[in-house]
Image (cartoon, rainbow, N blue to C red; front, side, top):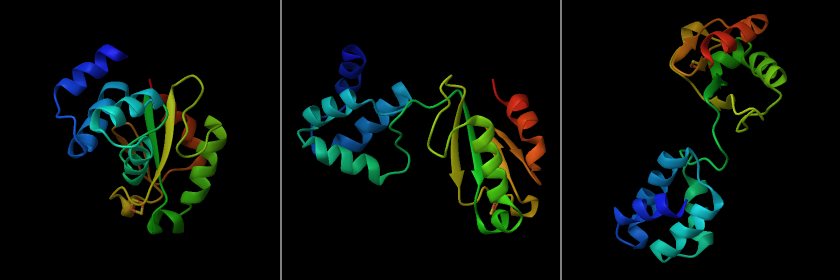
Length: 150
Ligand code: FES
């Protein structure tokens, strides 16, 4: 890890202003922010570790655990909620055995919820990687996961 971090740090100035770009590069490298990389970023940018934690939890783009090979996003926006989005989320959670923000033990799926994916007319909607599914029926969820996930 040290070698990759040194490479990332070599592209930035070691100041507080570089903190977010450094964290973005770390996430691009590892897919999330490993704790030891966050500590190294704090030392490099000369800020307290608690500040790195504060910045990284403020921005939803940063993840704190490894992300699965497939990203499942279940819409919980108003239109989807009205059309049964909660039931879809329950089914995905129960099928995968994880809650939003978690990744399956085999690293295959990460589950997230979103506030709207722009497919309200097709509510309830969900996305698996680049595939958007509308009018999702809970009993078809495994087909969608297996069809779109690797
Ligand atoms: S509210 Fe779900 S797609 Fe818009």
